[in-house]
Image (cartoon, rainbow, N blue to C red; front, side, top):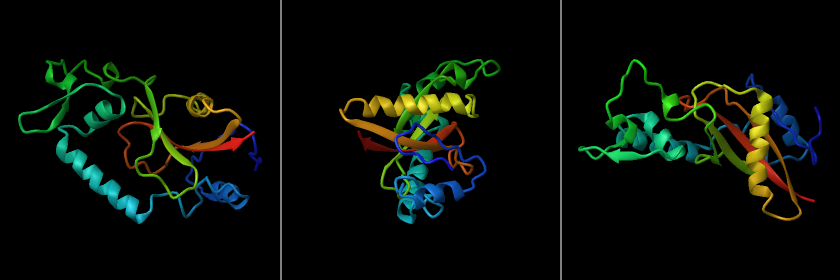
Length: 187
């Protein structure tokens, strides 16, 4: 394994094998989850379950929550006081309609995970406007670097380390996303 100190690195855990995470955790990178911390804690998992139920009950279409709340698209309130994406309230030719007309594979949003794992660093998600992975690992790594750098570059004498991976057990497969764990490093 390559030691990470002060390097731009990424980790893609395709097979769900936590041994690599365990290795980095064991050599002092406690901001990276290890095999016992790759899921939310029971308390956070319960909060996530309640939140998902609330979303499903308050939005006409589950995808609309992500389109509107994550990607910032307009929404409206229905007569039964549920939310719906505004694009759904206009006449749509269902044979030619694709969510790519609303969000595209190029759309991405980097934000803190609402249901973070038990780590000491930052646990964020990078959401893409597509259901399946449409970028190479190298492109995704460039996106992660760019997004974290936007945050950290505002401060003097700081750099960062990060890892990212595609969760093999996505609880929200409606939109492709990756988990990003990052930590600042004083230079």
